[in-house]
Picture 1: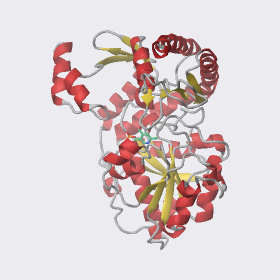
Picture 2 (picture 1 turned 90 degrees about the horizontal axis):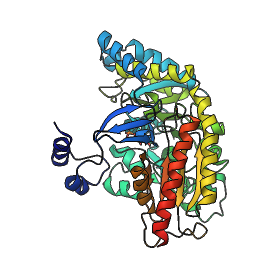
Picture 3 (picture 1 turned 60 degrees about the horizontal axis):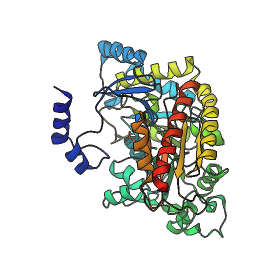
Picture 4 (picture 1 turned 30 degrees about the vertical axis):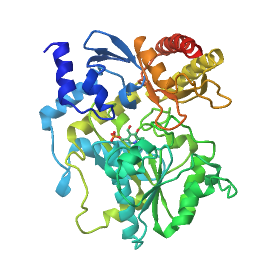
Length: 453
Ligand code: PLP
């Protein structure tokens, strides 16, 4: 089929996830990827682009990693698929569980496998409610999530997502999930006088009664909500709050897990041990759909004593091929010292972003942890003022980068948010970071001229 024929079929037959359907129906796909190599991907029409966001923050080892392909091939030839239902198992899943719990902080010690991030979060919600039920606390069902948190699109995960567009699409969803309306507020750190108190996690626990609350879920660093780092002391404060109120803490490390922030898990930056960690994406660098929930010993042991069927689990839980790919992925991360490399590259990225921010006054609030970074585009950063002639400045900017062969992502779901995210494959080199920064520089100059007119 020709490039044009493929475009036409796509336009006519496919409803794309998280896209504008009408735009797709009118224009067809914006790219048809055909090849990947390192930090670059090639479109079928021949253009080659730097993948500045590791596709969906997941292709951590970069594109065209043939060792991962070989691991999948060998496992598929040996034993492609077997289920974990009815107590069955397979060697890659067993070895992966052992490896992941070795990486996990504190006494996180048990794993439940899923096929992706949303399933992992739904699993974490179910298991935390079940944990309390097993302890005799039938009423502890509420899950509290954060404003601007993104947790996926299965019914419960979407309900927990604190971005308006997603909440609106989640219907009545899971009625026991409530969303804090304040963002990373001092109220969590015990400031009861904070104007945000009632909208904070702490305020919500008080309002609902701790006897009704099962868990709090949050990303250690928010991704799709606009790349927000927690203020110092924030995660520890949430940990303390959960301990004090007898509520479980779930860290959604779907983006951060396995090296993205320069640690195996981002919670390690703040020495926090959550009760559960949900993971996906980086565990296989996106080469196979796999995720899971890691849980503390107390949770695992309580569930392990249940003597009837646990009515939860996915056909692809513990998929042998996925687990073999994950094992190879983690082996490469260790062998190549990727996590330390990320810390080194963060310095380069920070330096580059800092220089750009000095030079371009529309660029503001640049932030990075490991290779997870973002900045905002504003006419007047001091006054949080947008460009009147372009309220979608981030979108315009991302298009300008695309024209310069760099793929980035924009976030403008909520009023006044015009964030650009950068999360390149973790294998990026110093020279490639400079190349990326140079493109940003050129694109900023070009769009700024347009906005000033
Ligand atoms: N949690 C976080 C933090 C995510 O960023 C994502 C996806 O981007 C998810 C959960 C959902 O994962 P999936 O799309 O694999 O269901």
